[in-house]
Image (cartoon, rainbow over all chains, first blue to last red; front, side, top):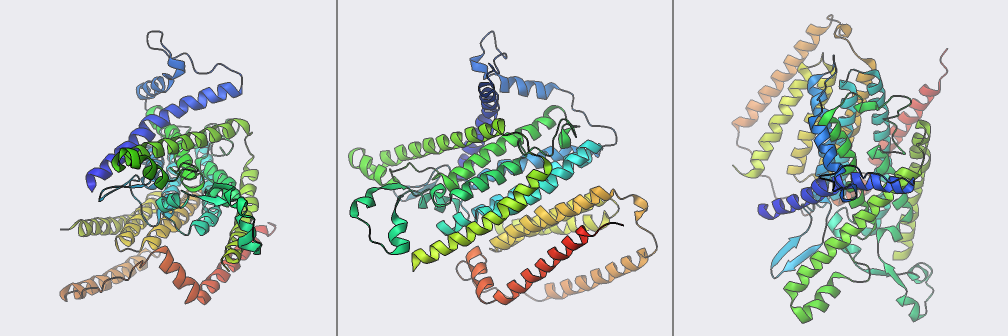
Length: 381
Length: 167
């Protein structure tokens, strides 16, 4: 139904691009201020009211829109104009397949809280992510500036390298859940698993019955802890924020690929990084942190328990709200983690970034695939 | 006109126009490479319309997302000038292109003259990652392994070339 899709798209765009992305620029300032024992963003005010510095994103936007939109001499005007759009669009449309809630039944009407749920959802995200390289590369090339060109070169090498490992590091998760659809992966995580289940599944040793009650949520992070770390590293490297900010570098190539950008065109590059932070958080949540699910409280339990008292319709509505809240909390935790990493780790050298990709994550993810396959084979027989 | 055929003709037209733009833009190499990207994305959209989701996604990931980026990389590093293209063999290339175009045009006219047969319905899951994966790793496993050996040889060769000391 097109109306339903439009509403869902509007919710995603409103919450993520309209509300969350500006607010996380504020979170980044405040969090870095706390970590560095500063007071932080607190000056922007309307008639003396500062609201904890929350007006800074507003001040940013006003400043960026009123600045001169500068195109350097000798630049390729067309490319210079469209490059920020190519950089920002993939980050926004990647949300299309990230589910912010499960599938709910209102009588015969099925409501799925993802804009689209293709059978090949993760492939869609990887395909979209690989397009984002062009924005960076073209921005650097079209500026007719050697520092920008160097930044673009570094960006393309870094992003192509990490695309390879990004795909490989996630294969273990796909093997465990046996699907590429993000909604199905979320549904699969809406349960619990026995902590000691591997003992009787793998070694055939019967367990005392009380150990069956020791359970953890069946989340991806518990099946594939190594993949969680590797995938997060790859996604952060794709996003080019510190500590992976090779395409920029104040002491070597100044601002790198967006050196010659000003005003809102610079703002688009800047915002696309923050939008991508939210994409990463949403994707990590969907794949590793159980998506919208609530630990130890499956959808059937909520609808069955509340529905027996207040009716199924009310219970389903409540369930949607709880699930959306659960999803947003997890997303905020993942955003916090990325910010904390960004302000904790020192910047890598270029060769360290490449070594991490090709000599650490690539072999480790192949080993991870082999071990996952061996364990699954042993558990099945 | 259904949504399906509208989308098909839209992306088909995009693919043809951008492919032409690539060939005609050969002196402006970056614009040519970008036209190639648009061709790749339009082709991927057509694959997706034809239920070949996996091929569509891989088309974007591998061709648009990696190979053409490497083209761009090289083009930008070389920074080609207009005079890099010698006028010597131009007539050969142009007459060859005209010949191929004529052949394809004749074929198109022949095809359009006869009514197209109705395609049989696709089996469940056709073109999805499951069907393609099972076919690749059971019926065609020898070919997959041969292709991977070929790629391995290419990687080793590239490494040896890169390691060679420059006199």
